[in-house]
Length: 396
Ligand code: HEC
Ligand code: HEC
Ligand code: HEC
Ligand code: HEC
Ligand code: HEC
Ligand code: HEC
Ligand code: HEC
Image (tube, rainbow, N blue to C red):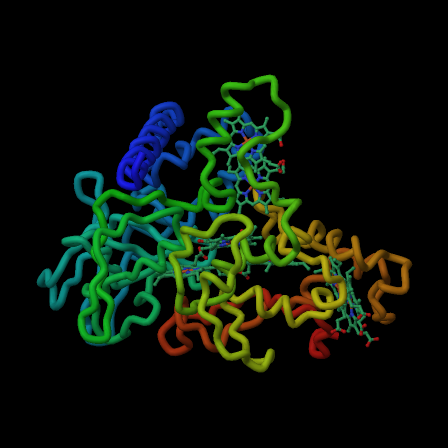
């Protein structure tokens, strides 16, 4: 066989192998991310307990179709509106089962757009996008939970409503499992992205963290007696850094990306995805969405060498505000009665054990928030739990 025939021959073999894999590995239901992915709900049958509890998490609901059930903000008068500085009023309207934001100036309708996608689970805030000619555009007003009111969307001016802010794909990289991008082009210094309509795997699903799982689902379905996992990364077998990176790809702040976050799989390195930025003095690190850097500055982290986000967080459950549960996790290293326990003597040990968090990880007003709030515009400044674990003299 000459070289040319060899190449053709191997090309045919390759094509056949790929084709046969496609046919035999096509998962039931399928997923728009491609054949390596199983349908998003296919984990339920075998991992029911995890699947069910996961549905309650902020991750699961961090994006989705916007409708009267998923929108957390008030839709009924008089609180269903926001008045901009120039007197223009943006009002929530419902029509034929759809929701709209309509801007009125002196009673005359200026502009009106539908809610298509909600971003944010509504823990703290929710913002909304509408679809227009290949782009996701942000609606002018968002819902702010601490203020219990609608107000101009983060980064938007407070004096007049704007309907023309296109949202970049990076939003979806952290707030969804996948978004379809049709094309990317440069227009001057700005990147212009065109999205594929209706191609969004909303929310953060199992495979967003665990990686594509069609092979796992097919294998386990074909071998129901098999009690060990095949074709699935074992997170416990990853090193500490790799386990942290799985979370940090979305929790190390808003930074330029080298690759789309949605391509991250367990075992990948954060440095291959997120552009390194000059280190800040720790006191100036923004507490918004930057849990990694704050935690990394803590002695718990540097001293234990084995701390991951899972040392305190259970990835499939909502434990928010359960200070006792979190305090138990602190005490797995700082055992009551041991020399590692809290050295504060003015408070009884039993009281200390109820809540380590408010003293050592106080909720801190975020000064440099670029995304959610902006001191001047937002009705109340947001505050975020700092991950810089230390002694805060002011909470003595
Ligand atoms: C047909 C049954 C079946 C389906 C469907 C299934 N799994 Fe599994 N999976 C198993 C079995 C069996 C194990 C091994 C026992 C265990 O850890 O629960 C396992 C283990 C795992 C593990 C732990 C791996 C380890 O060893 O640490 C993860 C993660 C996982 N599955 C994720 C998923 C995801 C994500 C989906 C959906 C895309 C899914 N599984 C669908 C049967 C299934
Ligand atoms: C795909 C991006 C992404 C990944 C990966 C990710 N997160 Fe998140 N996480 C988010 C977003 C976005 C939110 C905000 C959700 C909301 O409320 O809309 C969030 C919120 C949270 C919250 C607050 C939830 C609450 O109920 O208060 C915790 C805690 C958290 N993440 C921990 C983790 C941990 C631990 C990991 C790794 C095991 C992880 N995250 C991986 C994007 C991600
Ligand atoms: C690098 C990942 C990342 C990017 C990019 C990102 N976010 Fe977030 N976002 C987060 C994380 C993480 C949180 C939760 C922060 C926390 O609680 O500390 C969050 C929180 C939010 C919340 C509040 C959710 C809630 O219910 O409390 C909204 C709304 C939001 N983001 C909208 C957006 C929009 C719109 C964009 C794009 C312009 C965007 N985000 C880009 C990671 C990201
Ligand atoms: C935010 C990221 C994230 C998401 C989303 C996620 N997991 Fe996990 N999962 C983890 C981490 C981290 C671990 C390792 C847990 C640990 O170290 O305690 C894990 C462990 C597991 C395990 C093996 C250990 C166990 O607890 O039995 C299974 C099975 C599993 N996940 C299934 C799922 C399924 C099914 C879903 C969707 C319903 C899902 N996971 C969604 C991060 C995630
Ligand atoms: C994985 C083990 C581990 C966990 C979990 C843990 N810590 Fe630590 N922590 C350490 C180690 C190790 C040190 C450093 C001790 C030293 O240097 O003497 C430390 C130090 C500290 C310090 C002193 C910090 C300083 O700057 O002097 C405080 C306060 C603290 N931890 C509180 C907490 C609280 C509160 C929690 C729970 C939210 C927690 N830790 C969870 C291991 C842990
Ligand atoms: C030592 C324990 C500990 C570790 C380790 C830890 N967290 Fe947390 N985290 C907490 C506690 C406690 C809270 C507060 C929960 C609450 O307010 O209900 C919290 C809150 C959060 C929140 C919500 C913050 C807010 O105010 O909106 C996010 C997001 C989060 N953690 C992500 C992470 C990520 C990502 C990692 C790993 C880089 C991580 N955490 C590691 C203890 C920890
Ligand atoms: C009422 C606020 C408060 C509570 C609750 C509290 N601490 Fe403390 N903790 C302090 C203060 C203040 C100090 C410094 C005491 C001193 O200077 O003697 C301290 C000291 C410590 C230290 C030693 C720090 C060092 O300098 O090495 C550790 C570790 C610690 N706390 C862990 C915890 C853990 C774990 C819990 C929960 C079981 C907890 N603390 C609950 C306020 C508190």
